[in-house]
Length: 458
Image (cartoon, rainbow, N blue to C red; front, top):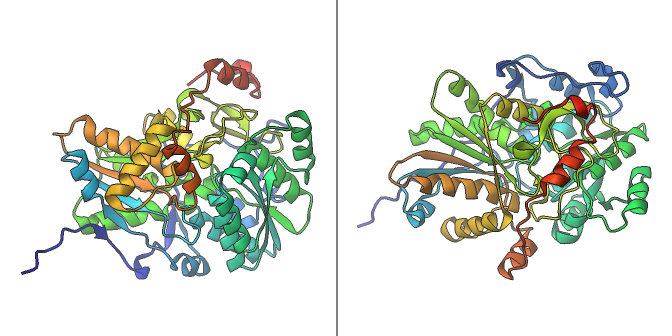
């Protein structure tokens, strides 16, 4: 006699793939401050972004409607791997001895192995629709670079990727995947751009930063008529595209006849966390008891120790001014292995949610996170990306803090770690160090903020 299996995976089919993206901006109490022209200090006009982005994405950046239809061509590519599974982590629950119910939304099933592909496909589509031939972008850990390389191949676009140097060295298989999809890739800073040459001259041994890589990609795009820039996080339209994650999770929780009390995601620029959490925000605003927790590394504490202020999105100050939590555009974090979390700023949407008390921000050390990732893999069979281990670590903390008080916890497993095995090797060899960025260094970086004297800490 066969016993009935416990439900673990909650699946929905292609026909239930969301038809619209959810735009959280109209629901934000107090809204968002406008992006500013750094030369005039005035709100940016849509045409100011035309040298970098296609019109369709510019419209989404300033959209005021709550739902925006997903083009059929985008849905057809997304349907290759979406909807992604919602999985009950029953073996992890038993290992922890908790009565809490832990679910994870697994984004590692995409062609590039992470959530980044959700917006990469949309951005490639809108650029192709408007006749763009070539894209330029940055990447930290390589997840965004490989996602956009895949998407560019789907829409027959050329792509040049500037990969933060420490990750370029640490993650050779990410580079290989990017090249397999047909894109070009160089370490940043590079001698290809004026920004890169200047940084290399000043600090030839720099590990690089996302701020510098963004500067290089922006310079590349601005210097060619056939090229536009693509960004993997932070901006409103990027977070918009990621809301397919949370919308699917809502439908899957209905199948499970459950609902989360806590939603946890890692935060670098904010797209993965916002994509999972913001579709649930209307319920929280309506009075539902729901905690939303964004987790960042101690070594790049944007939300927990930065300031909410106007700042540049890149180190060379080529971008417009964005009102966000920031450590200063000149901030260069240490070469931790969660390369996707090494950005000096945070999405304006996530920054606003934290400022309004709707999202909790916490920081974790990388050794604790890797330990959590290993435990998760041994229980559940999926090895999380180093970035995702931050969410797993915090979920374990929440589940074991009061083991007799059951909660329903939803974890954003933003990507797999199969191309990050070198990082895990270093963890097993006890070669990873925890690093809390010195407060004096944070304050020094913040002094370089535009108008820093008028900005107070959050």
